[in-house]
Length: 188
Length: 175
Image 1 (cartoon, rainbow over the protein chains, first blue to last red):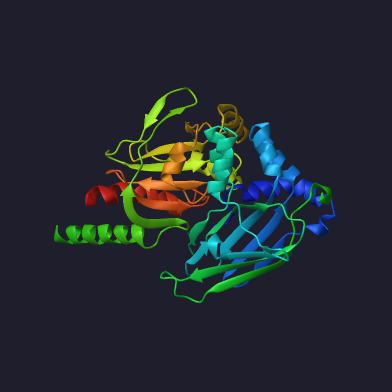
Image 2 (cartoon, each protein chain N blue to C red; image 1 turned 45 degrees about the vertical axis):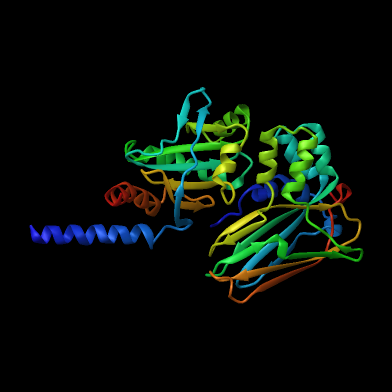
C-alpha cells in the first residue's frame, strides 16, 4: 500500500494551499508518531476546511452547519510491521483537564442526519470519510479517515492502544499524542 | 504423453500456489463469502446486475471522486480493462454515492471512458462493506468473494495482470 485511503489524501491536497500559505498553525498542529511497527498521523481540520470539502460534494447547508459544531481530525495509520495490527477506537483514550472526551460515533452521526433528513447519498459519503471504528490492519496497509469530537476549548491528550498478531497476543502498542487542539478558522 | 501429463500437473499446481501464496501486494485471500447481489445503472441508464453464477470471474471495484488513491488508480483500471479479454473477467466499476455530474466531470478529467455504475444512495457499497475506498473484490464464477484488494493498486503492472489471467483457468478447474 503506498497511499492512505479514503478522504485522507484528498483532504491533504485540498488543504495544502491553505496550510502552506500560513504559518500560524501553532495552535493546532499536525502530530506524527512513527516507530518501526506503526506510523500514525493526526491532523486537526478547521471548520472552513471541512465545510469546503462537503460543499464541494454538494452537501446541503444544514448538514454543513452541523459539521461546524464539532472538531475534525484526519487520522492516518500505516502498519509498517509484518504482523496484523488491530485497530479499535474503543481502545483510545482522550482526556483533557476537564475529563474524558468521547468520539462522536457513526451511530450518533446517523441520528443527527436523520433529524436533518439528510439524503442517503450524503450520509453514505460522510460515513466513508470517517475512520473505521475497528480494523485489522494487514502488514503494509495504510488507511485513514476523520474522527470527530465535541468542540473543545482546551488541549487534550490521546493515547491509542493497539493489539498485534493474528491472535491478538503479540506485543501491544500504545501511541501517545500530547496537547492536541481543535483547529480554529482563525488558525488558518 | 506421460511427460506431458506430469508437466501439466506441475504447471497447474504451481499456478495454484501462485494464486494463493504469492499474491501481488494488496491482494488478500479471504474465507469465501457470497457476493451481495446488485442491480445498478450506468450513466446512460443501462442496468447491470451481478449474476450469482457465470463462467468467469468478476472484478468489482468501489470508488469515489473525492478519494485521492481512486484518482491515481482509475487510469490503471482503464488500461487493465483494455488489456483483458472480455470473456475472461467481467468488470463492475461502481461509484459510491455521487451525482452523475460529479462522476462525469471526474472521468472526463482523467480521460477515462470506463463504464461506471452508479450506487446513487451508497446502499450497495454499504452491503459490500469495503475497508475503505478504493476497494476491489474478486468474485469467482460461483458468486463467492475469494479475494479483496486493499487500497489503490497499479493494475498495469505485470504481476497483477498475470494474477488475474490465472484466475479463470485456476478456479474454473476447481469449481
